[in-house]
Length: 190
Image (cartoon, rainbow, N blue to C red; front, side):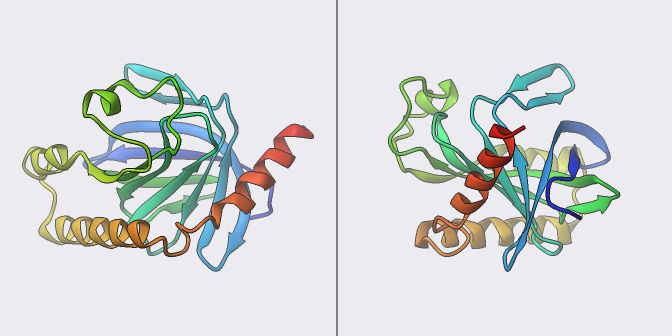
């Protein structure tokens, strides 16, 4: 796919249940995978909810990774949000994956003055790295009937991503800044 190509992301929950959908652009690829860009103001929708992003972000996807890592520009409550999900699959310019509930999150450092309420309520602090939605993952294993191999792959992926983020291994070492800068150039000149 050529850099600058408009793309669409369609995330579902297990059993083809609708989840988040949003548009962006394909930025390019490197040794880590494919980088997708979503400018500030991107509209994110799911049944019953619409959010407009308050900061630009880039997402890294790989054909074999059971995750999608989103790196945010400064200005919101977290700088990294990794969705544990089935490997993304392209259908033309549409990327599809199944969100498997678990998320690895790194809080922004410093935290912006307006902090995501759930994070504030949970007593989260600047720079903290944690796994979110473990309760949802346990509930959905039963409610949605996750197969044993999916549960195993999701948990293993979560553990691996958490270790990599805590250790600051690539791509969680500042690698994303190049792609955030590229997105900024593309959207500033548009």
